[in-house]
Every structure is written in structure tokens, then in C-alpha cells.
Amino acid sequence: MSKLFGSAAKPAKVANSRPHSQMHSQLVSGFSQQSTNGPTASSSNATRRELLRVVLRDTLNRQGIPAAWLGAETLMSTSRHHETGIHWRILVKHWDPRLMEHSVAIQHALIKRVMTFDPMASNWLTGISWQFALPDESVCPPLPHQAAWTAPPPEKPIVRPAPVASGGSGDVIAGPVRIAEAPNSAEEQTLADLERLMALREADFRTHAAGAEGRRPTFAATEPAKL
Image (cartoon, rainbow, N blue to C red; front, side, top):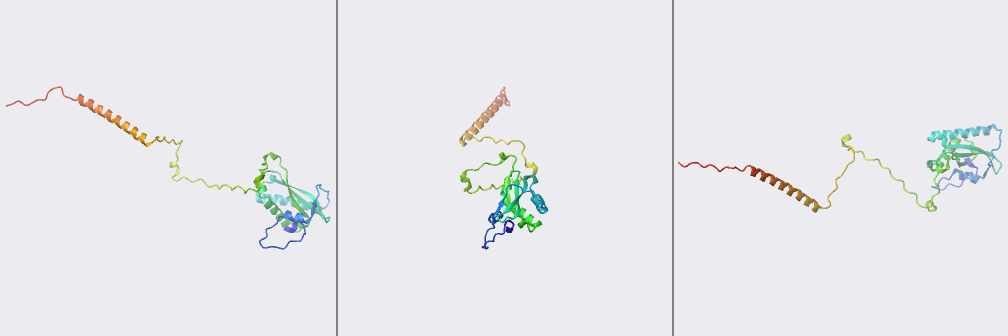
């Protein structure tokens, strides 16, 4: 698809070479863009504008991107060889970081779709640009610290699913769980246990003593008479 933005000679292929940007080919080809929309009566240009409109709508629908997030303008452009074409300006109307993250992939999908409908689109589509047309720019983040551009990107946190409790609904505890405070030390715990034990034994001793005193007989024991 590199021929889409110009007819510059292709560099020799190098093993394991990385694909360059489509806009890089457009800049090398030397197309100059005009900021004004020149009037045209050509039916071919009207057909091409309609094609670009349909391609944008179809691509957004295929990728699941809301249609209100991106729009487009078609501008007349002329190359340095006085060749007339159409420049496609994509308008970002809704701020979402995912659009910027996948903007290159979106642009490639648009170009591929145009070439599917019109294999000769490289003769008239001179380039693609992006412009922000946001109704409220306050939702956009500010520039970070200058050192952030050369710092390694932060690692994305790994989200793990919460463990599922076994045993069914019977294991669910209703209400807050209160845990009794532990004693300050083992010695204090032992001393408290001994004090409680001594108090219980003393109370038990008093109970038995009072019962024995109440059961003591008030008369002397009888002795058998001598024969």
C-alpha cells in the first residue's frame, strides 16, 4: 500500500526491515496541501468523496468504534507536479486514550478499505491527516514532566480474579467479625487464671463449710444399755 501516497522509488528491501509509516511515503512524494476547498464540478471527485465517507463509516462499524467519535473532511490538494487529488482529514471528536493508542492501526484499516473499493485510489488520494475537533478539551490530560518521555513506561498492573469461596452459601458470615483483644503477656494471662481459680475454690469451700455446720446433730449419740 506504500504506492497510495506517491510514486517515489522504493528502497531496496533489507532483511528483517520494519514497515515504515504510510504518511512517510506521502511526505517523500512531495504533495503540497491547500487549506481551502476549491470548487469542483467533476463527478469523479464527488464519487471519491462519497467513497471516503462510506469507508470511514464502514470501518468504524467493523471495529466497534462509535461513529460520533471520528469524522472526516475532504480537501483538494495539488502535488508539485500539478496533479490534483484529495486529502483526507480525520477529525477526532471524542477524547479517548484508546483512539490515540490505536490510531496507526485505524489509519491502516482505512487505507486498506479504500484500496478494496478502488484499487486506483493511489492516483488521487494524496494523504491522510488527523485533527482534534473536541467540544471540551478540559478532559484531555496535560503534558507530563519532561523526564517522562525518556523514562521507561510504567508496568500495567496484572488484574487477577478474586478467589471463589468454597462450601456454598453456608460459609457466608453475616455482619462484622470482631476478634477479642489478646492479653498483653502470657504471665498476665496465667495470673488472671489463678485468681479466678482461687476465687472459685474459696467460694466452694465456704459453701461446703456452711452446709456441714447446718447438718451437725444437737443431741448425744445413744449407747446400748448393759445387760
